[in-house]
Image (tube, rainbow, N blue to C red; front, side):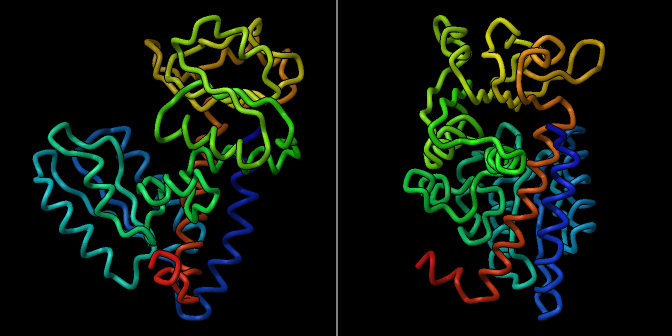
Amino acid sequence: MDGNALAREVRAEWKVRAARLTEKGVQPGLAVVIVGDNPASSIYVRSKAKACSETGIYSEIHSFPENARQDEVVRRIQELNTDPRIHGILVQLPLPRHFESSKIIASIAVEKDADGFHLYNVGALVTGNTIFPPCTPYGVMKMLQKCDIPVEGQHAVVVGRSNIVGKPMALMLLQKGATVTICTSKTRDLAEHTKRADILVVATGKPHMITADMVKRGAAVIDVGISRMPDGKLAGDVDFESVKEKAGYITPVPGGVGPMTITMLLCNTIEAAERSSAGLAAEHYR
């Protein structure tokens, strides 16, 4: 499953929607807030800004030093909440240790929650009514759709329980009619669960923990994990070389889920602009 190719396809579709809005005088706008000088975060932010430019989205980067106060960042977010040029707001994680991430995310207006992390949007996953799904699981669902991999009636196993990937991933698969098992890296007899999966999504951050003997032949294996190895290379949670011989579909790392995560951020931003333009944002969240 080529995440780069799929991302280009999805972005082309949404670029047309962004252009239609711009023709009406409403260019979708994304603001990225970054605190500190984490090298990885800086790279991600630059890649998001580049993706915005290529898709017809106006973008701003609001940078703060590592020692910035939390209330300073909240004030800036509140200003962005009322800025008509901005339809989506993203706070680059992780934040410095003296920040309470939950309070920062809660300060984002729900209708501008492009990352899908606000409690309203996360909670709405339970009822299947979220407007802005978290970008990584949203990207996984889009990959399954684009590759014509059926979800309804399939046994999906999610390894990982994070609020960003594992939990929302399980809820989104459940909403589409899958039978879902949630495991963690500490699940006893993990292989007994993963071997029964028609769709296996792994998001633990433990490199190469899923090996070929843990995978059902023909399964769709989605590797969300990414780790930097001692030799500097990137590795996923799945032992790609061995599992690719057994899986029906598999995502590489890098070049798999990563490009789709950024793509769905763009989609959420354009969706927010469309809803704002149609007067639906305030109505939905009233």
